[in-house]
Image 1: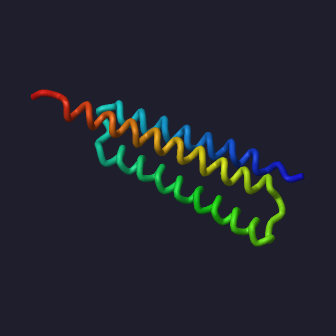
Image 2: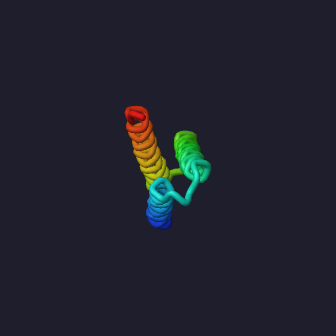
Length: 106
């Protein structure tokens, strides 16, 4: 039984946590400019898209009978789901910050 997918899922989750921490730190520090924060957020979106494409590819391979390992399919789908949840959380925080800035009175 191949359990390498489990460690890959936890490494993907750890990578996303690190990217999210980097994004939050960059957003809070005045030393980082908006471009850096924006590039970090775009990197998260691109990684989410890659993980979604991998999960879709694994699903197609399983449906066509090229892969019989349901574990790898579940791991790919879980990684894509976790990535999407983190990306949506970051998007929500950005929208919240935008609303807060727009409500400020000058």
